[in-house]
Length: 158
Image (cartoon, rainbow, N blue to C red; front, side, top):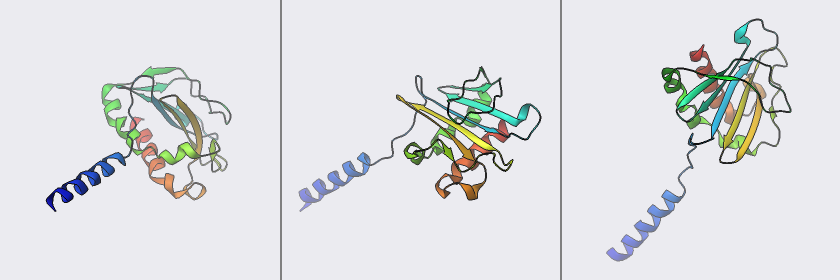
């Protein structure tokens, strides 16, 4: 009986460990780009785009309004190690359901001057981007936590 119990326990442990959620790691050329944009706004802080890479955080200096059909092409400068440390956990909140979205626009970003979020994901050969509405009632509930976390990080970086 004890041998059978050991086999069942081992099988259970292997099954549970095999189901462990795959972690996203910022290594090599992997990165997560994130930012906010507001069309009816004046000043440098209307568009804030950042790129989180392995061991560093960068900020875009061009502050261009993101396009609906193209990846963001910015010019980036490295920020302090402290800002990286304050932001590096954002990747842990990334909702993998985003990867299954069939459109790059979620909600109606910046349609009512409410602004939008730009997200770009580049991991292990998969590269995608999204424009996401800032108004929670316009986006699926499953993204609310991540959108709030992104906004919190951007606020703390200003």
